[in-house]
Image (cartoon, rainbow, N blue to C red):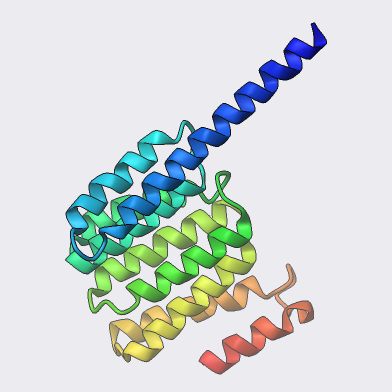
Length: 196
């Protein structure tokens, strides 16, 4: 009886692996048409997401590709919607390091945009999820990128106020409860001072 249970367990494990391979193959097939037929790629990436029984790395990767395609097509509202969906994977479906790497890569990618309102929403959404996930390091780095973005764009007037707000929040994240600088966060403080 014990042997049967072992075989049953192995069988379901094999089934799971076969499913993962099928999803992986579907992802790479979809990715192949990204340049020649982005519309097809979007549909195929959606199929990858549907194939996963629960959120996992392939759905996360598929959503990343969807976000990039929608950005290139200028479909910013849909892009934000799908990015928000992608961010739901950050809390449990992918590792912290992997999600940090991919979020940074997407933020770099969309920072090329001149659509400030969409770009701002993109960053706000990211920061909110990172705060909820208690990922302080990525929250800080993302907030710093937003500050650099405002600085680099030299959007004065409204932009200056936004940069000041970012700097204030960054400073606050590097302070102790008594309001003094947390010297353990010296590197982060230096980055803030460099942005000022």
